Length: 157
Image (cartoon, rainbow, N blue to C red; front, side, top):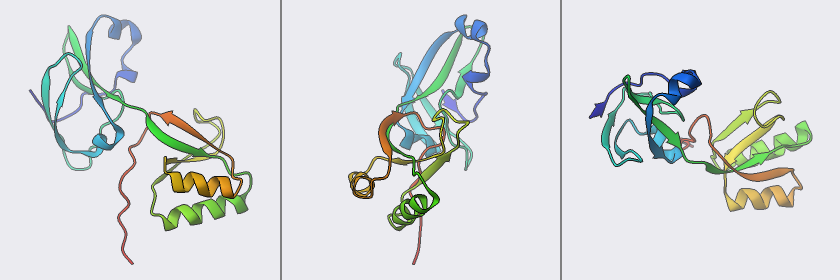
């Protein structure tokens, strides 16, 4: 079976409706979410091809296939991240400048998010962790399913 478009996200399917369906999952690392064309296998051994339009990234819970009896969804593996919570705008500026020079991708969340604080999240990197320790910047290392995949930073000088 070749999947060329998504049919929604399972978070939008009522729980009672979802409970009636046999669910198979395609478990992917976050880095695979940006791949437009790929061959995947469900947790029940069914092979699928995914061929999405340019710019269409996968997300946790995306529905690849659904009928009256079954549903096939995307399940994203947690990513090893650093959740950085600077205590001042000065500290935030230092951290943002240092990470910008490393061309790392960052995601930002506010107090209304699952983090319950204004934070910056980056993929784990031991040199970033050393920088944060050295500058006494509050952070936590966590395993998180990120809402958006981290992309390789393109840049020129």
